[in-house]
Image 1 (cartoon, rainbow, N blue to C red):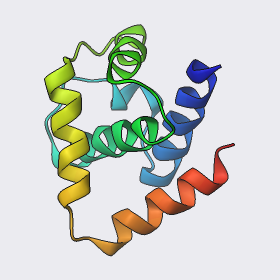
Image 2 (image 1 turned 135 degrees about the horizontal axis):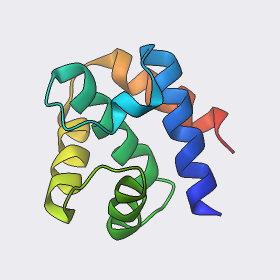
Image 3 (image 1 turned 45 degrees about the vertical axis):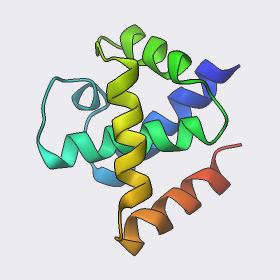
Image 4 (image 1 turned 180 degrees about the horizontal axis):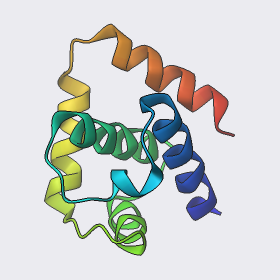
Length: 97
């Protein structure tokens, strides 16, 4: 059940940012991609999904990450002052049921 929600979040984020799904799971530290992953971690964590579930689902898509990296991404989104990011997260959480 949580895997399906994870996949919906991935599809919505990729659609909004206008990137192919596979690009989200590349080891690319460019801000566009890392922020997209951080948003994904944040919305999944608040769903709630455990950190280890997020790590597992990322791994299932070919992206090896760690618990610490996911926690770092979640923290970066919590600290952001960008209202557009927060608006997008709010929209995303309302949209994905």
